Length: 168
Image (tube, rainbow, N blue to C red):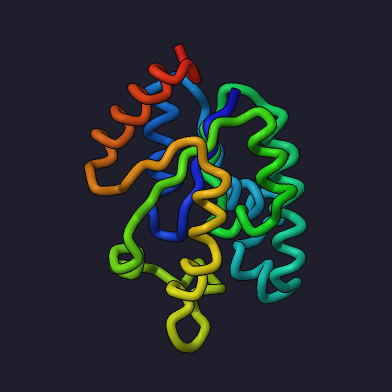
């Protein structure tokens, strides 16, 4: 069984994934970093050279591959939920946790240099939030508000995972 972390960009998915993995004795995987490593280039470069559709194809292949592993805490990309097949792969052998952070906090201290979809004109974060929030709710097994420290959030997640029999 894997633990899958979903949420908007800037919600803390990677940070929580690595700390939670340490706490429960699992290994952590960040799907975006895996894609970058395999491509030999950044996500920005993939978007620039090949476009979003190519990135999403790579993301689906990565989801399919990591879903076969066991005892991993997997940090997804913010848009992973946009493809149903990604979530089917991940949910097949995984328990999904949605890191729910209010929109106004998602916009604070946001580094858009590594997030090509957030560099569009207007208010792209609100647009993405409105598209994705219903999908996060649809696919999650647990919702975790991001109103505590990383330490306290991971402690609470671990407790809830034990109560629900997901981990020992």
